[in-house]
Amino acid sequence: MRVLVIGNGGREHALCWAIAGSPMLSKLYCAPGNPGIAAVAECVPIGVMDISELVIFAAENNIDLVIPGPEAPLVAGIADAMARADIACCGPSAAAAALEGSKTFTKEVADAAGIPTALWERFDDAAAARDFVSRRGAPLVVKADGLAAGKGVVVAMTEAEAQSAIADFMEAGTLGAAGAAVVIEEFLQGEEVSVFALCDGLTAISLGAAQDHKRVFDGDRGPNTGGMGAYSPPPCLPPALEAEIMTRFIRPTLAEMHRRGTPFRGILFAGLMLTADGPKLIEYNVRFGDPECQCLMLRLKSDLLGALVAACDGELGNYDLRWHERAAVAVVMAAAGYPEAPRPHTPIGSLAGAEAVADVKVFYAGTALLDGVLVSNGGRVLSVCATGASIASARASAYAGVDALAWADGFCRRDIAWRALASAG
Ligand code: AMP
Ligand code: GLY
Image (cartoon, rainbow, N blue to C red; front, side, top):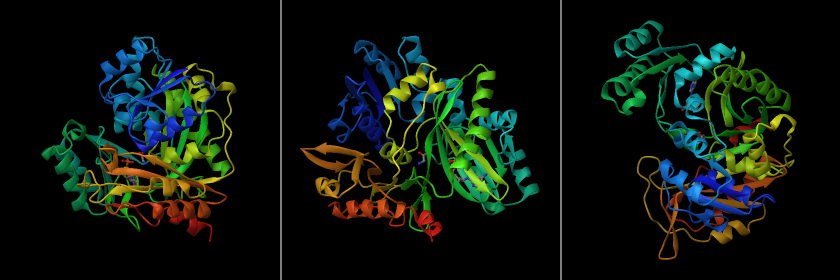
């Protein structure tokens, strides 16, 4: 098979690394890729949102399967565009990608499918939203309806914070069209967990679960980021609870999407809160998480490519994935200044030293080669990952990998997986 992966992050490096080992693969491309991905795939300089160019490339190069990593091209209709050119694409149509692209849509689907989620209301009008907040009082969560690259959610512990989120999103237009409407919902308390499923439109199979760390600094302080680290499997999600999430959340969602005539195909990522009243859906994403994907790929024993093909062919009914009985931890190394203003183009040394640490695998994200030197080129730059017999041992190896790097301008959180270690006693 000739395969094209789309993206340039640590997630796409992990996907390419997993697919590169597939016995079904004959040629792997990645657009646009990065210097780490270049070791396992041929990188093609086409951006993730240049959909018509990606279709032309795929057609001209006889691509058998396209695998988009990030959400933006899916929400923009890359799967539909590939379908029109008769090219298989493992991802949802734009209509089905609304599960990530529109908070209101997700809430409507959840309600129709009887899925537990926070009570919510949608507002197109700032005055009505403000009035609702003053009637309900804090805490509340204010969410921009559209895609906002992680900046569209304000967990407001005070009424003033909620009011200022409404002013920013709906009046100042800080998020553009994405913030024109908001969903305001009940504040949920509990432990957050991410569950991944591979879907073929009718059937879903588990792709494992993980927990991540969104805040930039130790102790879950500082602004939100795309994710500073992750670990899998999450100790708070025993197998029976994971199975329950497949039965009570994922499968009813698939059935509802099918009933609406917009079947979901691809990776469905459920963000859940384990509350005192049981699990509740926080959000859906229509792709793998980054860096959760890195952990899942290190734990997956089965051939990923075969599974993705089965999802495209509607044949997951008899499919079964095998996993290594090991834990995985990913520690993200970011450039100083991330997330506001990551310092660009600082040299990174001793990658080989990090990868020489037993059980460590480094996936590249925002990196570039300048005159043959590997430099940072973005906010999240590397995910230093490791496997181990336990989360504690995987974490120790990952940090040994971090310590072997020579990158003065990089930083990471030092407390990745603290919850898992706390629960292990
Ligand atoms: P999202 O961008 O939708 O992933 O939301 C960002 C973060 O906001 C989530 O990871 C949660 O930590 C938090 N969050 C979202 N919705 C709620 C809610 N209803 N109650 C409490 N926290 C929430
Ligand atoms: N790490 C969270 C995400 O990919 O959305």
